[in-house]
Image (tube, rainbow, N blue to C red; front, side):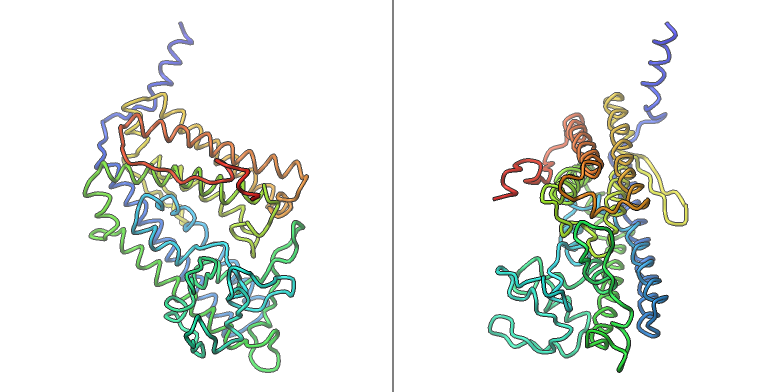
Length: 417
């Protein structure tokens, strides 16, 4: 009898004291998005200041400070990725700030082993060393590297997605350079002298490299300011999800499920393991991939629980999807909450191992059982929680939810074709 009573208490603990509505849930969702993008903007502004210090006084200290600012900027931004997929305003914008993988030879010098891509004639352009070039039949003047040039001319030039000229990963490459360590430890090792003016400049064109890094960070700040405004009161993204709460819940579940399954478990994690290829790492130049994966997982959990902890420790929270689900099926809510926690724990295990000296690159090495176990632990946890997200869709009767897939999960044989 005692056991039954305890079980009953546990099962009802998830039920909210007062019923929540879809309208309240989507308002919380929009408020979390606004806070997350505002924090992404603030940390990008701190990155911009660190980049300005690097350009003004190149040194190992200012380079390391800029790298640290870049890593800090990834923490809030990665938690916003759960707002993708279900929101066209975010989907149409996201490619400007977080596109990957990229053909970094488009931007700057690369190692001789890099090679020319057969599919992308601009893959070794090195625009920093090339003030004039031909794009199709058009002569391009790249003598001034400006935000508008990067955004309007170079980014996705020739219609090729790998021509990533803007966003976090272009900046990452300019701060770290290529990681030439394969599946061994170590990140990119670009020297600060790549930004020294005059005779101290290494690898040429330090002034143009500085202009590119300055323009890219300026553009990142502008793009994040735009998206923060979209989620503020009166913003287009907030209006889109709150005008029709049922469609707003559809967006929430589409974003959670697509990031959990096709994007994170599939394209960002399992694919790299299948190919044993560190070039498939999300933050491949800085070896920060373990952090990006972890905060993606935290972001999915944030959205379901209606709660986000800002970098200064402030909590933003409100009526949640979890509470809405609990009103329909308390057991399903508890199961999904437990699974979301389990995926964060699995991603934390990767993060802990990486921070203890077992680099994510090393985890991807063929035959590394420890690495495979860590990575597949996260993949399996993410796949498991996606099944429960799909059950939530059915339980709430939400129509039109189509989750992103991935060949690495749905059709593994196609990966090697």
